[in-house]
Image 1 (cartoon, rainbow, N blue to C red):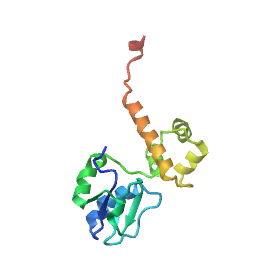
Image 2 (image 1 turned 120 degrees about the horizontal axis):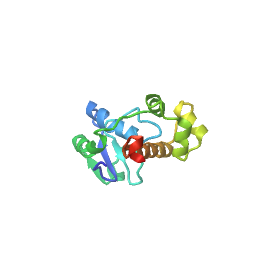
Image 3 (image 1 turned 180 degrees about the horizontal axis):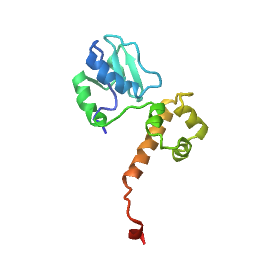
Image 4 (image 1 turned 180 degrees about the vertical axis):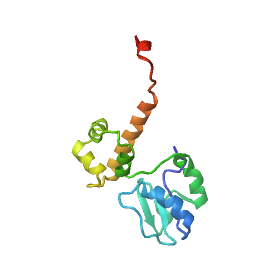
Length: 152
């Protein structure tokens, strides 16, 4: 878990550092990625937990410098690998999409469309899939293989 406050923003100053740290983090939480940045605008997560870009800082509880953002978000991002759903199911092609859909309590046809890029999942659906991936990973991490004779 990261240490970012519930509601925060960073002022975009036109720097490459903002575009390589704050922007990817925000875009991972948005349905539509931020493409056009405006110098002097605040970009962050507001009190309603919505990714925003606004001129006024009044929508946010805390204004962070880029360095503060990097430090506070670091813990969550250290070992994170970003994938689209298409990339995920291509990389982990041994995962059966239909069976994973059942595991994630999602419609198998919809999951197939997501994994083939036919439909882009909403933020809510993406989070549900991501939560299922993490749950699946935790279950796999608990597995210990033994010889057949050990069980008997």
